[in-house]
Length: 377
Length: 262
Image (cartoon, rainbow over all chains, first blue to last red; front, side, top):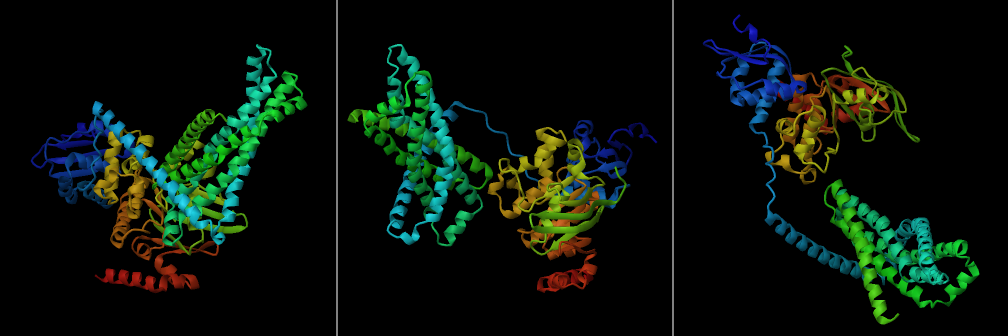
């Protein structure tokens, strides 16, 4: 045999009057990378095919072979192929069929250009503007729904609201209290360190009390709820959207804003001021503990000083809580409604909800601080 | 490998969820190269059986051997090797939503077969074409696909490593009749080409008549009958009689008979 020395090669062709294509070895996925390097398009156009040396072939091998020869040629060769089992013939045929209308791999991404950055900036600005409009739209829609439902007690979702209050408010109580206690202690330490230099350590009490009543209590509670509850709202509503539950509500003539948003909104508006009050108390307890242990200010003395602070400061702080609650709840719900289609989208929007609500809370707090100061409150 | 021709062997399988008993002393054998259709009313635990066999669910009791090995008692390396020889098409497709269709199909090739992205994409495209997915779908994300396209893409992913056993959970549900018929043919071609063993959970009587070699009926917490379709359809059991000889069953059977005489 003249082609004996070529037996090793997976693909060989002999050059007599009727060129015959010989296939050898294992044409499977395991050897795909190696095969791809080894075999080359045959120089001659084969008339016959001999597959008696073929020990195995799968879709990957079939793809490679058909890529080398072309679908049309394989079709011509197949009926006359020697040593090819009926099954393998069927496999090659169906792969050849498939490869005639196979999708093209997507093209590579275009290289980055400077103008892309300008375009991206413009696009981002536009998107953020749209977000703002969407938010205002949603705020209006929620308020209108609220005022429509308010005079009709039979449409109040008391159970849902209480359940949300339990989840978003009551369950957050331990973490809010603990965190504020610790921050209260830290602020007291800080005050003691700085004020001791002036012999004014007694003012540490005022520092802690003012800080927590006016700012920190409500701010920390709001930031915690922004992380804890806004994300939960987005994930809940987002998963419902993915699962087409929102569409199911709409086709039944039920209003998702009334059913899903209002209970969450009300729960937040009711519980955040309460949580903020707990936060103020825990913060001052933390401060009192540090005052007692390291500044020798007794608890009676501490309470005496706090007692002299006008209650107005506490009210100024707590007045911010309902506004923060409104923002957190609305952002959480709105991001949930924006979810589209996939699990990934739920994740993206949950992140967005947390970032946005923390951002909004801090910005509003800064604005409020400025306003209070200008008013001389 | 084990030379036995029984690729799936289930003995005394029990599955309980709290008080709710799904399977009790269930036995089932699937031979190499056959297409086994599994039918049963809703809630009879067809999907639970499938999940137990592929090792996603630890059964309450019983023994399951897949290609002669007990999946749950293997160490992680052997288990991975065995899982590579198994392809699963889930009921909802379970495509990875953060990847495009092409990336979904190419992922096992890159991870397991060690191909470059270019090679993997090339092979993935062929699989997509084999399952009859439209050209433009390769670059889309699963969220943008219709139900039928998701099924095809998921089948392409299940087939991509040329598995020995293919598990299909209601593959033709959500396909149009033309697509479903093409799917049945595709299944037969693949089985003939690879000696692929198929475990097929279905409600599609046409698929049962066209593609399945044997049919197992799940009822009353066990496999009631496991035989050729004709034998199963002739079984004297109320549910089976209603299943195979209801209006839909008769239509599928008539079509099959007329197809044979042609």
